[in-house]
Every structure is written in C-alpha cells, then in structure tokens.
Length: 383
Image (cartoon, rainbow, N blue to C red):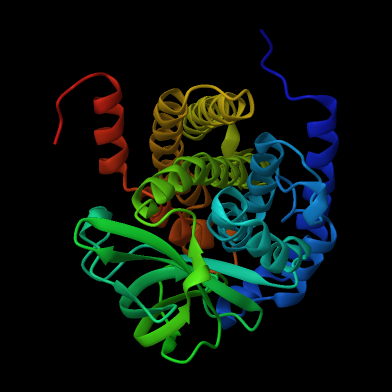
C-alpha cells in the first residue's frame, strides 16, 4: 500500500504548476474582471498535452492515466478555477464521450483538434427543466430520411460558445422512454448559442444556453447505440465527479497556501496573526480537510485507473466529490476570514475563490445527488 503519487506524476505536477504560475496567475484577475476567455491559454495547454492525457497516441494523445488528468486539473485549479474547469470539461465532457462511445470515423474526425487544443467541445445534458432529474429531458430528435431533426434547449453548457468550439454532444429523446446522444457541429443551421450567462463566479469560463430549432444533422452523428444516451452520460458524470473533486482540492490548497503566507506576513499587536490560536487552529483544520480531500480524490482516480468495478468507482467518485467540494467552500470562508477586510477585496485571489467555490457543490451532480448515490451504494432504498 502506498499513499504517494509516482515520480512521473510529481514531475508532471511541477510542469503544470510552473505553467499555471507563469502563464495564468499574472493575468487571471484581469481576465476575471473582463470575463475574457483566453483562447491562447487553451491552445498552449493543448501544445503541452494537457487535453490529450487520457487519449491514445493514435489520436495525438499521450495515453497517460486518469490520475495524471486529476493532477493537471488540481494544479490549474490551485491558481484559477475557470482555467481548471475549462480543461476538466474539455476532456471529461468534450473528449471523453467521443473517445468512449464514438465510431472510428467520429474519433478520427473530431479528436485530433480537440486533443491539440485547436478546438473545444461541449456536453449538452442539463436543460431548463431537467437538471438533477436528467431523465426528464425534453429535447427531442426525430429520425427521417437519414437525418436527425432536433428541437429543444440546453442550459449551463461549458465550452459551448467559444471561437474554437467545434461541436456539442447533446442528449435527446429519440422515442418515448429512449434517450440518445447526438453530435451537433458548431454552426449547424437551427443550432443557436445563446448569450453568455452573467455568473456569480467562473467569469473566465465559457458558459451558454443552447437552442435547437429544427436543427438537422446526419444519422451517422448518433453517438454510440441508439437509446444508450442515459447510460452514457451517467458513466461520463462518474468520471467527471472525480475530476471536479480534483478541481476542488486545487481550490482548497490554493486557499491554504495563500492563508499561511498571509498569516505569517500580516502583523497585529506586534506579532504575526498566525501566532494567534484562532488563526492557527483554523488553518490547521483547513490543512486536515485538504489532505483528506486529496486522498479521497486520488483513491477514486486510482480505482478508475486500476479498472475496478463500475459500482466501486461510482461510490468513490460520489464520496470524493461530496467531501472535496464542501471542503473547498469551507476553505474559501476560512481564507476570507483570515484575510479580514482584504479578503473582501477583489485584488486578493481569495475573493475570486470565494465566488468560484459554490458552483462546485452544484455542477456535475449536486451535493444532494451525491448523498443519494452514496446512500444507494450502502444498499438503502433512497428515492
């Protein structure tokens, strides 16, 4: 039994951390204020191989393990959550469905640009009236004369409206009681990307609603087996929850690092505030939660890399996401308190972290959904 990442993982962590601190950290405050999506950073991450970590070499990837992706997301999230979620969604929700369920032709067509960071893809699951209850999907797709005609709407879709977005995979009812996944290329007539949301946080991340009005795509744009869409997105979300947990670990670690530094530098009554038990104990508790969140996250990632049973991965993913995301929200509260009045000022990163944290408890399965999944894993008949 070991609780250490491999030397290769730690070497890769340093590569990502250096990139994040050099190319991202100096600019994120301005990007956040301007709601600017930095395409050049996405392309740079592609050149460094971040988007291709879990992709086979034949499509331009490096065939690394899922743990490596979690390391990258954690380190980016330690500096900025929007950049972290851009990678997480770009791989977990954009690349993963095509890589896992696509035909050879679909993979050859879409993956090389997505892996290289030349393109991004979105995953259209959530709808205005179908969030946690994803089975209540109202978007419909009718097959006739070799084409799917799609009508409906999607909400809160990441990476769906950038200048380099190439496609969105959407779930739609293809018959009563049947949900399928369909690839919709950007620019398809009848496919409209709505204006960007005015969000509490994640100001740098690209998020839009989508509308489909008699949007037609070829029959071969079906992803995987017809009627298998519900199972597909459940599996996609299991992986995504581990990755979101890694994003939360990065945020919590960032809060701890900033707070320890500030507690050593900030003096009151002739001594650093870190010498006060009230501050020191709060940061000690934060260090414990960061360590616990990291262990839960990388245990779940290890289960996936080891090819363990899907039910075990699902349970571990839910536990990791629940704990890590709630720990991250708490971390921002503690950090803001340590910084005092400065913590309420946008010039300090903890203020941005405070705004960014809450969505972690909501996206890719709310905390309530995670508790429901965990309870089911325990054998409880929870509804």
